Image 1 (tube, helix red, strand yellow):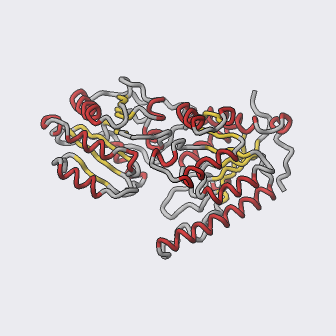
Image 2: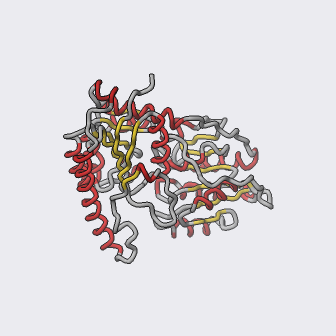
Image 3: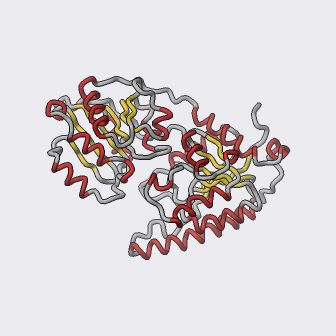
Length: 391
Protein backbone atom coordinates (compact mmCIF):
# COMPACT_ATOMS: atom_id res chain seq x y z
CA UNK A 1 0.00 0.00 0.00
CA UNK A 2 1.40 3.40 -0.96
CA UNK A 3 1.96 5.94 1.80
CA UNK A 4 -0.94 8.41 1.87
CA UNK A 5 0.97 11.58 2.73
CA UNK A 6 4.48 12.97 2.52
CA UNK A 7 6.81 12.67 5.48
CA UNK A 8 8.92 15.75 6.13
CA UNK A 9 12.51 14.78 6.90
CA UNK A 10 15.66 16.86 7.29
CA UNK A 11 18.90 15.19 6.29
CA UNK A 12 22.25 16.49 7.50
CA UNK A 13 25.47 16.18 5.47
CA UNK A 14 27.33 19.38 6.40
CA UNK A 15 30.45 18.80 4.27
CA UNK A 16 28.66 17.01 1.41
CA UNK A 17 30.91 14.01 1.99
CA UNK A 18 28.65 11.80 -0.12
CA UNK A 19 26.83 14.08 -2.57
CA UNK A 20 26.25 11.35 -5.22
CA UNK A 21 24.80 9.05 -2.54
CA UNK A 22 22.67 11.91 -1.22
CA UNK A 23 21.30 12.47 -4.72
CA UNK A 24 20.44 8.80 -5.19
CA UNK A 25 18.78 8.63 -1.78
CA UNK A 26 16.78 11.75 -2.59
CA UNK A 27 15.49 10.07 -5.75
CA UNK A 28 14.35 7.08 -3.70
CA UNK A 29 12.82 9.14 -0.90
CA UNK A 30 10.77 11.23 -3.32
CA UNK A 31 9.47 8.02 -4.90
CA UNK A 32 8.48 6.86 -1.40
CA UNK A 33 6.64 10.14 -0.72
CA UNK A 34 9.23 11.48 1.68
CA UNK A 35 9.88 15.21 1.33
CA UNK A 36 13.59 15.66 2.12
CA UNK A 37 15.46 18.85 2.88
CA UNK A 38 19.25 18.66 3.01
CA UNK A 39 21.37 20.76 5.39
CA UNK A 40 24.75 21.06 3.63
CA UNK A 41 27.54 23.40 2.62
CA UNK A 42 27.26 25.37 -0.64
CA UNK A 43 28.28 23.62 -3.84
CA UNK A 44 31.91 24.47 -4.63
CA UNK A 45 33.02 26.19 -7.80
CA UNK A 46 33.58 23.60 -10.50
CA UNK A 47 31.44 20.94 -8.76
CA UNK A 48 28.16 19.75 -10.19
CA UNK A 49 24.97 20.50 -8.23
CA UNK A 50 24.09 16.91 -7.27
CA UNK A 51 21.06 17.70 -5.11
CA UNK A 52 18.03 19.62 -6.38
CA UNK A 53 18.43 23.22 -5.27
CA UNK A 54 14.87 23.40 -3.99
CA UNK A 55 15.61 20.51 -1.60
CA UNK A 56 18.85 21.98 -0.24
CA UNK A 57 19.53 24.53 2.49
CA UNK A 58 23.32 25.19 2.22
CA UNK A 59 23.90 27.12 5.46
CA UNK A 60 26.99 25.26 6.69
CA UNK A 61 30.42 26.91 6.05
CA UNK A 62 29.07 29.66 3.80
CA UNK A 63 32.09 31.91 4.37
CA UNK A 64 34.80 29.39 5.25
CA UNK A 65 34.49 26.42 2.89
CA UNK A 66 36.46 28.07 0.10
CA UNK A 67 38.44 30.57 2.17
CA UNK A 68 41.72 29.38 0.67
CA UNK A 69 43.41 32.65 1.59
CA UNK A 70 43.46 31.56 5.24
CA UNK A 71 46.56 29.71 6.54
CA UNK A 72 45.98 25.98 7.01
CA UNK A 73 45.77 25.91 10.82
CA UNK A 74 43.69 29.06 10.95
CA UNK A 75 41.33 27.67 8.33
CA UNK A 76 40.77 24.56 10.48
CA UNK A 77 39.90 26.76 13.47
CA UNK A 78 37.62 28.91 11.31
CA UNK A 79 35.86 25.83 9.96
CA UNK A 80 35.33 24.53 13.51
CA UNK A 81 33.73 27.82 14.51
CA UNK A 82 31.66 27.78 11.31
CA UNK A 83 30.54 24.23 12.08
CA UNK A 84 29.33 25.32 15.51
CA UNK A 85 27.47 28.21 13.89
CA UNK A 86 25.94 25.81 11.37
CA UNK A 87 24.74 23.50 14.14
CA UNK A 88 23.20 26.49 15.93
CA UNK A 89 21.38 27.38 12.71
CA UNK A 90 20.25 23.77 12.35
CA UNK A 91 18.81 23.78 15.88
CA UNK A 92 16.98 27.05 15.22
CA UNK A 93 15.52 25.76 11.97
CA UNK A 94 14.46 22.41 13.49
CA UNK A 95 12.72 24.32 16.29
CA UNK A 96 10.99 26.65 13.83
CA UNK A 97 9.97 24.24 11.04
CA UNK A 98 9.47 21.05 13.09
CA UNK A 99 10.48 18.26 10.69
CA UNK A 100 9.08 14.87 11.63
CA UNK A 101 12.52 13.22 11.54
CA UNK A 102 16.11 14.49 11.45
CA UNK A 103 18.55 12.13 9.74
CA UNK A 104 22.31 12.66 10.12
CA UNK A 105 24.38 11.18 7.29
CA UNK A 106 27.73 12.13 8.83
CA UNK A 107 29.07 13.58 12.06
CA UNK A 108 31.88 15.97 11.17
CA UNK A 109 33.02 17.12 14.62
CA UNK A 110 31.48 14.63 17.05
CA UNK A 111 32.09 16.66 20.26
CA UNK A 112 29.98 19.45 18.75
CA UNK A 113 27.58 17.26 16.77
CA UNK A 114 26.51 15.29 19.84
CA UNK A 115 25.41 18.50 21.56
CA UNK A 116 23.11 19.29 18.65
CA UNK A 117 21.91 15.69 18.45
CA UNK A 118 21.10 15.67 22.17
CA UNK A 119 18.83 18.70 21.74
CA UNK A 120 17.26 17.52 18.47
CA UNK A 121 16.28 14.09 19.85
CA UNK A 122 14.17 15.82 22.51
CA UNK A 123 11.81 17.20 19.87
CA UNK A 124 11.76 14.58 17.10
CA UNK A 125 13.18 11.17 16.17
CA UNK A 126 16.88 11.09 15.29
CA UNK A 127 18.34 8.72 12.68
CA UNK A 128 22.05 8.22 11.94
CA UNK A 129 23.56 6.47 8.93
CA UNK A 130 26.93 4.88 9.70
CA UNK A 131 28.57 4.56 6.30
CA UNK A 132 31.83 3.20 7.76
CA UNK A 133 31.19 0.90 10.71
CA UNK A 134 34.90 0.45 11.41
CA UNK A 135 36.12 3.91 12.51
CA UNK A 136 38.89 5.29 10.33
CA UNK A 137 38.85 1.92 8.53
CA UNK A 138 40.84 0.06 11.14
CA UNK A 139 43.51 2.63 12.01
CA UNK A 140 44.61 2.72 15.64
CA UNK A 141 42.35 5.06 17.61
CA UNK A 142 42.70 7.04 20.79
CA UNK A 143 40.08 6.86 23.55
CA UNK A 144 38.73 10.24 22.44
CA UNK A 145 38.34 9.07 18.82
CA UNK A 146 36.54 5.91 19.91
CA UNK A 147 34.28 7.94 22.18
CA UNK A 148 33.55 10.37 19.36
CA UNK A 149 32.59 7.47 17.09
CA UNK A 150 30.34 5.70 19.59
CA UNK A 151 28.46 8.55 21.27
CA UNK A 152 26.43 9.68 18.21
CA UNK A 153 25.21 6.07 17.86
CA UNK A 154 24.06 6.08 21.47
CA UNK A 155 22.03 9.23 20.84
CA UNK A 156 20.34 8.08 17.62
CA UNK A 157 16.96 6.39 17.90
CA UNK A 158 17.77 4.31 14.81
CA UNK A 159 21.04 3.54 13.03
CA UNK A 160 21.21 2.64 9.35
CA UNK A 161 24.08 0.52 8.01
CA UNK A 162 24.58 -0.80 4.49
CA UNK A 163 25.68 -4.40 5.08
CA UNK A 164 24.98 -7.25 7.46
CA UNK A 165 28.67 -7.39 8.31
CA UNK A 166 28.46 -3.72 9.27
CA UNK A 167 25.50 -4.53 11.51
CA UNK A 168 27.49 -7.27 13.20
CA UNK A 169 30.40 -4.88 13.70
CA UNK A 170 28.23 -2.34 15.52
CA UNK A 171 26.65 -5.03 17.67
CA UNK A 172 30.20 -6.03 18.58
CA UNK A 173 30.81 -2.42 19.69
CA UNK A 174 27.87 -2.66 22.06
CA UNK A 175 25.11 -1.08 19.97
CA UNK A 176 21.74 -2.77 20.71
CA UNK A 177 20.70 -4.89 17.75
CA UNK A 178 17.15 -3.51 17.81
CA UNK A 179 18.47 -0.02 17.01
CA UNK A 180 20.23 -1.13 13.80
CA UNK A 181 18.55 -1.43 10.41
CA UNK A 182 20.31 -2.62 7.25
CA UNK A 183 19.41 -0.54 4.20
CA UNK A 184 21.58 -1.27 1.14
CA UNK A 185 23.69 1.36 -0.60
CA UNK A 186 22.49 2.07 -4.12
CA UNK A 187 24.47 2.41 -7.34
CA UNK A 188 26.16 5.73 -8.05
CA UNK A 189 26.14 7.28 -11.48
CA UNK A 190 28.65 9.20 -13.53
CA UNK A 191 27.01 12.06 -15.38
CA UNK A 192 29.64 11.81 -18.12
CA UNK A 193 29.14 8.79 -20.40
CA UNK A 194 31.95 6.29 -20.82
CA UNK A 195 33.48 6.02 -24.24
CA UNK A 196 33.82 2.70 -26.02
CA UNK A 197 36.70 0.58 -24.72
CA UNK A 198 39.77 1.07 -26.89
CA UNK A 199 42.39 -1.66 -26.36
CA UNK A 200 45.88 -0.49 -25.46
CA UNK A 201 48.00 -0.36 -28.60
CA UNK A 202 50.53 -2.85 -27.24
CA UNK A 203 47.80 -5.26 -26.13
CA UNK A 204 48.42 -4.94 -22.40
CA UNK A 205 45.62 -5.70 -19.91
CA UNK A 206 44.74 -2.64 -17.80
CA UNK A 207 43.98 -2.70 -14.08
CA UNK A 208 42.66 0.38 -12.29
CA UNK A 209 42.96 1.12 -8.58
CA UNK A 210 40.88 4.26 -8.11
CA UNK A 211 39.97 6.47 -5.16
CA UNK A 212 41.63 8.59 -2.51
CA UNK A 213 44.95 6.99 -1.65
CA UNK A 214 44.79 5.92 2.00
CA UNK A 215 46.63 3.21 3.99
CA UNK A 216 43.63 0.88 4.31
CA UNK A 217 43.15 0.69 0.54
CA UNK A 218 46.22 -1.51 0.10
CA UNK A 219 48.04 0.29 -2.70
CA UNK A 220 51.26 -1.00 -1.14
CA UNK A 221 49.90 -4.56 -1.28
CA UNK A 222 49.13 -4.16 -4.99
CA UNK A 223 52.67 -2.93 -5.64
CA UNK A 224 54.17 -5.89 -3.79
CA UNK A 225 51.92 -8.29 -5.74
CA UNK A 226 53.03 -6.76 -9.05
CA UNK A 227 56.61 -7.34 -7.98
CA UNK A 228 55.89 -11.09 -7.82
CA UNK A 229 54.70 -11.34 -11.43
CA UNK A 230 56.80 -13.22 -13.92
CA UNK A 231 58.44 -11.27 -16.74
CA UNK A 232 56.02 -12.59 -19.41
CA UNK A 233 53.00 -11.53 -17.33
CA UNK A 234 54.56 -8.16 -16.49
CA UNK A 235 54.98 -7.45 -20.18
CA UNK A 236 51.20 -7.83 -20.64
CA UNK A 237 50.21 -5.81 -17.57
CA UNK A 238 49.36 -2.14 -17.08
CA UNK A 239 48.20 -0.64 -13.76
CA UNK A 240 46.77 2.84 -13.21
CA UNK A 241 46.61 4.13 -9.62
CA UNK A 242 44.47 7.26 -9.63
CA UNK A 243 43.19 9.47 -6.84
CA UNK A 244 44.01 12.26 -4.44
CA UNK A 245 46.66 11.20 -1.90
CA UNK A 246 45.61 11.26 1.75
CA UNK A 247 48.95 9.88 2.91
CA UNK A 248 52.63 10.22 2.08
CA UNK A 249 53.08 8.43 -1.23
CA UNK A 250 56.86 8.86 -1.41
CA UNK A 251 57.42 5.31 -0.03
CA UNK A 252 55.05 3.92 -2.67
CA UNK A 253 56.93 5.72 -5.45
CA UNK A 254 60.24 4.46 -4.07
CA UNK A 255 58.97 0.89 -3.90
CA UNK A 256 57.74 1.04 -7.50
CA UNK A 257 61.26 2.02 -8.52
CA UNK A 258 62.89 -0.66 -6.35
CA UNK A 259 60.75 -3.37 -7.96
CA UNK A 260 61.37 -2.00 -11.48
CA UNK A 261 57.65 -1.43 -12.01
CA UNK A 262 57.94 1.98 -13.61
CA UNK A 263 57.02 0.62 -17.04
CA UNK A 264 53.75 -0.93 -15.88
CA UNK A 265 52.52 1.34 -13.04
CA UNK A 266 51.13 4.78 -13.85
CA UNK A 267 50.39 7.12 -10.95
CA UNK A 268 47.77 9.84 -11.30
CA UNK A 269 47.96 11.33 -7.79
CA UNK A 270 45.31 14.02 -7.97
CA UNK A 271 41.57 14.47 -7.66
CA UNK A 272 39.82 13.09 -10.72
CA UNK A 273 37.06 15.06 -12.43
CA UNK A 274 34.00 13.25 -13.80
CA UNK A 275 35.53 13.47 -17.26
CA UNK A 276 38.75 11.97 -15.89
CA UNK A 277 36.82 9.16 -14.21
CA UNK A 278 34.86 8.37 -17.36
CA UNK A 279 38.08 8.16 -19.37
CA UNK A 280 39.75 6.09 -16.64
CA UNK A 281 36.96 3.53 -16.41
CA UNK A 282 36.84 3.31 -20.19
CA UNK A 283 40.51 2.28 -20.11
CA UNK A 284 39.98 -0.36 -17.42
CA UNK A 285 39.75 -4.09 -18.06
CA UNK A 286 39.74 -4.90 -14.35
CA UNK A 287 39.27 -3.05 -11.05
CA UNK A 288 41.52 -3.68 -8.06
CA UNK A 289 40.27 -3.39 -4.46
CA UNK A 290 43.06 -4.87 -2.28
CA UNK A 291 41.57 -3.25 0.82
CA UNK A 292 42.66 -4.15 4.31
CA UNK A 293 39.27 -3.05 5.68
CA UNK A 294 36.05 -1.56 4.34
CA UNK A 295 32.34 -1.58 4.99
CA UNK A 296 30.67 0.23 2.08
CA UNK A 297 32.76 1.53 -0.81
CA UNK A 298 31.70 4.48 -2.93
CA UNK A 299 34.10 3.41 -5.68
CA UNK A 300 32.44 -0.01 -5.82
CA UNK A 301 28.96 1.51 -6.09
CA UNK A 302 30.20 3.82 -8.83
CA UNK A 303 31.70 0.99 -10.88
CA UNK A 304 29.63 -2.13 -10.10
CA UNK A 305 27.41 -1.77 -13.17
CA UNK A 306 30.26 -1.22 -15.66
CA UNK A 307 30.96 -4.88 -16.43
CA UNK A 308 34.59 -4.91 -15.21
CA UNK A 309 36.39 -7.91 -13.72
CA UNK A 310 36.91 -7.29 -10.00
CA UNK A 311 39.77 -8.44 -7.78
CA UNK A 312 38.88 -7.55 -4.19
CA UNK A 313 39.51 -8.44 -0.59
CA UNK A 314 36.82 -10.52 1.08
CA UNK A 315 35.65 -7.70 3.35
CA UNK A 316 32.51 -5.61 3.75
CA UNK A 317 30.47 -4.91 0.65
CA UNK A 318 32.77 -6.95 -1.59
CA UNK A 319 32.16 -10.09 0.44
CA UNK A 320 28.42 -9.41 0.20
CA UNK A 321 28.10 -8.49 -3.48
CA UNK A 322 30.96 -9.82 -5.60
CA UNK A 323 30.06 -13.25 -6.95
CA UNK A 324 33.32 -15.14 -6.83
CA UNK A 325 34.08 -16.58 -10.25
CA UNK A 326 31.34 -14.71 -12.13
CA UNK A 327 32.12 -11.05 -11.53
CA UNK A 328 35.60 -11.41 -10.12
CA UNK A 329 37.68 -13.06 -7.43
CA UNK A 330 37.72 -12.50 -3.66
CA UNK A 331 40.90 -12.85 -1.62
CA UNK A 332 41.85 -12.84 2.03
CA UNK A 333 42.89 -9.29 3.04
CA UNK A 334 46.64 -8.80 2.91
CA UNK A 335 47.39 -12.00 0.98
CA UNK A 336 49.98 -10.67 -1.47
CA UNK A 337 50.82 -14.01 -3.20
CA UNK A 338 47.10 -14.68 -3.81
CA UNK A 339 46.70 -11.16 -5.16
CA UNK A 340 49.62 -11.70 -7.54
CA UNK A 341 48.09 -14.98 -8.69
CA UNK A 342 44.70 -13.34 -9.30
CA UNK A 343 46.31 -10.53 -11.31
CA UNK A 344 48.29 -13.01 -13.41
CA UNK A 345 45.17 -15.13 -14.01
CA UNK A 346 43.21 -12.09 -15.22
CA UNK A 347 46.05 -11.03 -17.54
CA UNK A 348 46.32 -14.47 -19.13
CA UNK A 349 42.61 -15.41 -19.32
CA UNK A 350 41.06 -11.95 -19.87
CA UNK A 351 37.67 -12.77 -18.31
CA UNK A 352 34.50 -11.15 -19.62
CA UNK A 353 31.77 -9.85 -17.27
CA UNK A 354 28.20 -9.03 -18.23
CA UNK A 355 27.06 -5.48 -17.49
CA UNK A 356 24.80 -5.59 -14.42
CA UNK A 357 21.22 -4.31 -14.47
CA UNK A 358 20.88 -2.12 -11.37
CA UNK A 359 17.17 -1.49 -12.01
CA UNK A 360 15.23 0.59 -9.52
CA UNK A 361 17.43 0.00 -6.49
CA UNK A 362 17.07 3.55 -5.20
CA UNK A 363 13.28 3.26 -5.22
CA UNK A 364 13.49 0.20 -2.98
CA UNK A 365 16.05 1.98 -0.78
CA UNK A 366 13.74 4.98 -0.45
CA UNK A 367 10.87 2.76 0.65
CA UNK A 368 13.08 0.94 3.16
CA UNK A 369 14.30 4.26 4.56
CA UNK A 370 10.73 5.53 4.88
CA UNK A 371 9.89 2.43 6.91
CA UNK A 372 12.73 3.33 9.28
CA UNK A 373 11.23 6.79 9.74
CA UNK A 374 7.71 5.45 10.21
CA UNK A 375 8.87 3.02 12.89
CA UNK A 376 9.80 6.03 15.04
CA UNK A 377 6.56 7.95 14.56
CA UNK A 378 3.19 7.44 16.24
CA UNK A 379 0.96 5.30 14.04
CA UNK A 380 -1.39 8.16 13.20
CA UNK A 381 1.49 10.52 12.41
CA UNK A 382 3.14 7.98 10.13
CA UNK A 383 -0.05 7.50 8.14
CA UNK A 384 -1.19 11.11 7.88
CA UNK A 385 2.15 12.93 8.14
CA UNK A 386 0.24 16.07 9.06
CA UNK A 387 0.65 16.66 12.77
CA UNK A 388 3.69 18.96 12.79
CA UNK A 389 3.37 22.58 11.80
CA UNK A 390 5.43 23.83 8.89
CA UNK A 391 5.16 27.52 9.81
